[in-house]
Length: 217
Image (tube, rainbow, N blue to C red; front, side):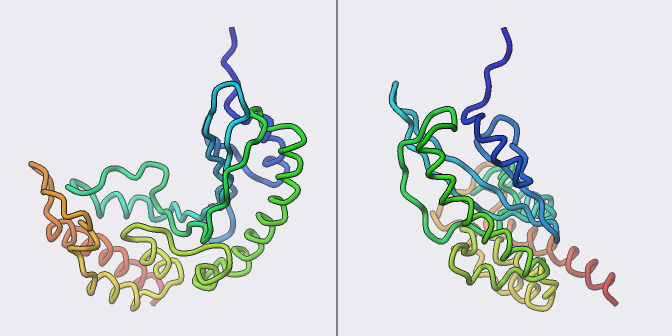
């Protein structure tokens, strides 16, 4: 018996025609743009027995070149685990769409109607990212995307733009206690305090910034 197809497998050709590649068996597809930018489309599916699942499709933006930096900055953290494939997350959708019932295999009249509306959205998002691929700050202030939640997306935005002075100022002046431990969680045995994690992150990003500035001089 062959392996079952991934969920929403009938969407793969639609995304492939537009230059996207499915991430394993996830209901997520990515497209690599200039500047190392990854534009990802993710479909969240809530299964409801035999009926059509409630489905929501969003797009978000990652800068995977900063994934290793992020993981090094939070190593041995008491307050956050490994971000996995979301490391380097930069931009989230400004407004989340509503869930709607769509065919479970990713094909059918309801999907056809949805993709007719969704296609121009992803084309506009891609065009905006391509236009501002060297400095994504205008995209973060645009109608669809906003800076993602989390500690470091704003810093990644500055690093990607090459604004190293602003990036150094950002990390040096981070109010680290509420930023790193907003839930006021207890320090775990053998893990870092908020101050220790901040000093670790500060060193990681300073080394990176210093290296990049040396390359540009």
